[in-house]
Length: 185
Image (cartoon, rainbow, N blue to C red):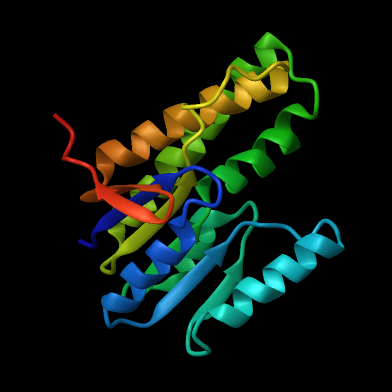
């Protein structure tokens, strides 16, 4: 049974870089599961820059929605970095609820995504290698002014809690500095 490590923090806090160092330190092959979609030119350049910064020996799987299948397909030996849970959840939320979710959409999508998250966590628990999940921490900001923003914040907050509870180790990144979090009580 492999380990699950969780890396969270705000935007541009250094999460991905920290997760990449953790993966490199395992001395195993690395599979990088990327969830960012190249929706415009700036995003295409960002993705290319990130890909160029990773070691050439690392395998990248572009999986904006099918993260569980990507992790299962990575096999047991490699360290897998899932970067990031928050973008996967964004992609799935927009697929299911669109730009204007109603209260019932939020509940329906939450139930569906909870099932997908549990399947993901089950696939990770069945692996032999370490899995590092990166996710944004959105609970420290203001209450979003739109229904979509509030549904997203609530879904991601619950997803982050579920991952953190299952994680063997967890870190909060702030301004490029990692604070290891204590195990759940």
